[in-house]
Length: 422
Image (cartoon, rainbow, N blue to C red; front, side):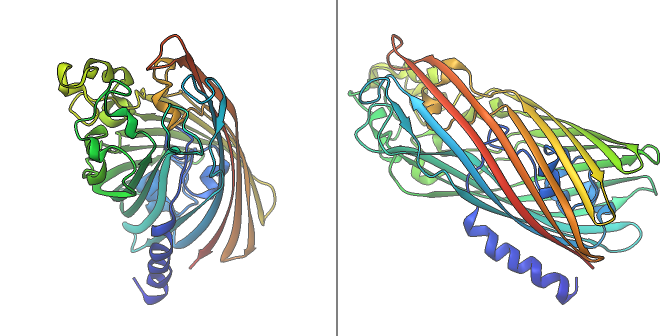
């Protein structure tokens, strides 16, 4: 890697690492990685005109050429709740902190006829709320903020002139901060934590882990491509300041994508992806919130079900399926337009609504638009917009089944990305 290539890589890692913020789209995964993918509903398992192979499909690095892309996304989620335990009961409480700026970076380089390499830097998150008053009965303001930074170096190998395989080690750094749920431990609520001092209001706590993403890409014909990407569950170190909540462990769920794209006209390409995210297989995310109930009574209950213990409550999220449909139209020599539709299952069921007031990752539908304009033969500018209409989930209050809780969310984002070829 020459000095010209190394300099933007180092700069991007330094600038990006401290400022990854909250997403909440397909659960807590982003609807897409790279502005071109975001303009197409996230359909990028077979998308080769991008430097974000490490986030989408490592095998794509073999076809992306020499390029660097750096972008910034304005993300605006609006979240509110009508909670049975709010003061006054049932009143609407709206979360603050509605504007986030999320950077992303991709670099790709062809080494020789067989090998290519690169790096993608991106974020996940979305378990983010900041309620000025406590909707679950506590005296303090309540909220949670989960942030994940992923650095994905990528190596890809061309098996022949029609197919490639790739691998991306995933270097993951995440932080969490939880506030306003300390009253979940003790007689006031009738529920207990396995470690009440490491449950809430302890500031930010960090965790690290290393995973992997594997990829395959195949040109079936001159007009049809297929691809697949797989990442097993990644074990993360514990959040030491929150071992009384989810046992302090927040692993990254197993996920995979299958994709196909077809050139339906000389200047028009359709892309279709299917993604599966297995949230329920991570205890901190998938354990039912009702698991708190056997711990009722403290030492007289089943301690293995207390918060932070082996069977302690999580968010109760279910595994989800995501369909991503995108279209790209090369409208002119210098202008490419994109549109997309992203539809996912809702991971939050009504029976788990109370705990998910903290983290309402309930979006199901996303409409996207975008485009790229070539400034010259070696540089371009890309923009992408996403709109997700309001979704609502209502269910019985966990602590007072006679009452009901409602969570609602809507969101939009607008991003810009600059790209350079070399």
